[in-house]
Length: 206
Ligand code: PRP
Image (spheres, rainbow, N blue to C red):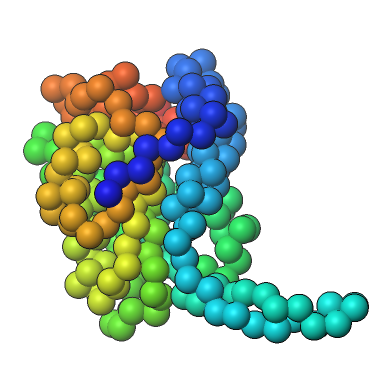
């Protein structure tokens, strides 16, 4: 399933994010804010356990999250998507996956993975702003499935139709939550009209 956000705040903030004159500090703030809004939508089906809570007036029936959540930022650009969610879900674990895209072949190359042998979380949120060819997302989800994770969601900001199709083909069980599906990929594998390089624009390295 593909969920393209219809929320007006997401649309407004994405427009600011795309703007070439938006500087890295503002860009990082927008990545954080849009990610929070998308995660609110992406986590709507999380399970809860019923618990009792003592209020100053008596006992209320409440809920607590049933599953341990893993945040999986794909380095580098996914890093800016972590902190907002982590403030909202401080009990989440963060497991970094390092991948870069070979500029010539556009294939993902893995360079960092410190996952322990056995899975420690029940639900994984893969965080990467850009779903271009879909190769990086599919490779990350391959890694998580080999680890033993079985409930995985992808949360991104912009996608090309080509990336959506590739990820759905490779991992049809993984829902895709995205702010916007753009027109296409250009001949060097960038999303058009897109927002440029999400890593460079966050870290001021463009
Ligand atoms: C970008 C982006 C994704 C990947 C998307 O990362 O953040 O990880 O490319 O492309 P794909 O869907 O075609 O695989 P990049 O390789 O530029 O690395 P960086 O985040 O370290 O800048």
